[in-house]
Image 1: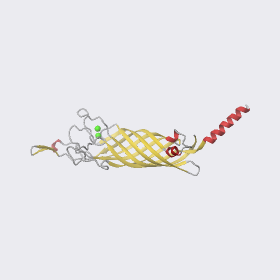
Image 2: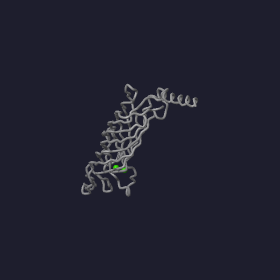
Image 3: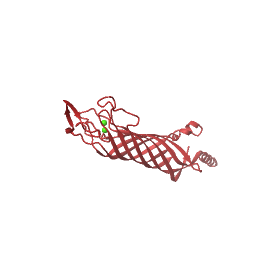
Image 4: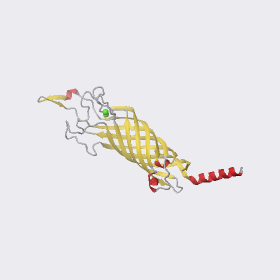
Length: 258
Ligand SMILES: [Ca+2]
Ligand SMILES: [Ca+2]
C-alpha cells in the first residue's frame, strides 16, 4: 500500500512538473488580407492582346472576425466570418468582373506545437505556431457582370464584332449568373502564429500570418460559367487570401501537459 502511494505520488509530481502552464480556452479575433481570384481567366495572347496578367490585376481585399475554442494551446475550432471582394480581368476573352460576398465557416486547426516536443529545440520552439486548418462554410453575394446581348453582336465592314461590354457575358453559351446564395466552400489554411504571453506564462495574443485557399461549389462567383454541356468547363471558381490576423485569448482556463 505504501509503495503504491509512493508510486502515485511520484507520478503526480512528475505530471505536475510536466505541466507547462494554463491556457485560455476562448479567443476572439479579427483578420484582413489580399484576395486573388482563380476563376479560369485567360491571359494568353489572343483576341485582346493587350490583356496581360500583372501582379495586381486580380487582387482585392477580404476582412472579418473569428471566435474560437482552444482544446489545447495548439488545437482549436471555431467560427469565421468574412467580407470578401474578388476581381479580375479584362482577359483575352474580354471578360472582367468585381464580385462581393460574405462567408461564414466552421473550421478547425492544429499547430506544430501539438505534434512535436519543442522545449529543447530552438527551431521547433519558433515553429510551434505553424498551423494547418480545414473548414466548411457557405458564401452568398453577387457580381457586376451583365447578361450577354445578342443584338450587340454586329457586322461591320463584313466582320463580326462583339460589342458586349467587358463586364458582361460574351456569348450565349455562358450560363453564368449575377447572384449566388449559400454556395458551399472548403477553405484550407496554412498559417503561422507568433505567440505573446502574459505575466503568468499563458498565451494571450496570437499574431498570425495566414495563406488560405478556398474551393467553392459554384462557377457563378465571377459571373462567367461556360455551359459545361457545350464547353469543357470543369473547374469551379476558387480564390485565395493572404493576410494577417490578431487573436485575443480570454475566459476559462485549462492545463496543458506536454
Ligand atoms: Ca466562373
Ligand atoms: Ca469554370
